[in-house]
Structures are given as structure tokens and as C-alpha cells.
Image: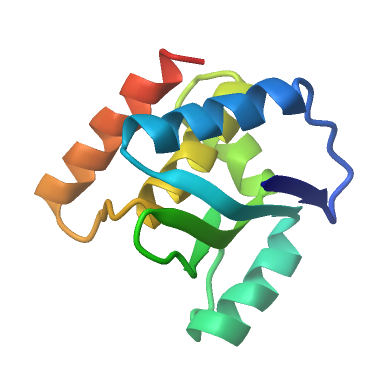
Length: 135
């Protein structure tokens, strides 16, 4: 089950299609989504979560909390809509495309992908691009 919750005034169109797409990503990676919760917030709320849970005093676009067990994907993903909008301008793409990229990025973390070094970052970016084409 995938849930999408908003603590920020933002309208996400095509929620059913997005959920189907996220399930497709998990399936293609050999997993099933058991429980995946997305929480969309503003920068201030994201900063609070970042400080509280990660002891980081800076803004970020996404925080992922993994509670998966084997091939059953479970977790919570917090996304700052303000960061997504800012990044869409920075990378010259549509807001919805950048939002899908960030959502896929969080799911890919739950699927075991990492971006701690340049090689792993390249791999996760390639996966993001691969799955964005499947939307």
C-alpha cells in the first residue's frame, strides 16, 4: 500500500498513476511494496525533521526511513515540495518531473541503492532516468 500525505498546500495530480508507477519500479527490481508512506512538507518542516532524526541542520529535498524486510518494501519518505520546486528551476525541468525523480530516488534507496560516492550516485541517477521514461 502506498499513501501520499500533504502538510503543504500542493496538489499532486494523477496519484493513482504515480502509485502504479512506483509499484512497477519495485516489481522490476524484484520486490513488492508492503507499506510506503510519502509525506510532502515545506522547507521549515523538513528542516525540523532533518534536525530531529538525522541531527542535520540544513535543508534537503528528501529523507528516507527504511523499515523493509527482505523483498517486502516498507518505509517513510519525506519530501520538501519547496526544494523540489527550487530544484526544478535549477535543473530546468517541470516540477512534476522533478517530484517523480525524487519519489523514485527515495524508493530506490529502499530498494538498496545508495548515492554515497560518485559511482553509486551515477548508478542511482541512471535508474531514476530509466524509470522516469516508464512513467
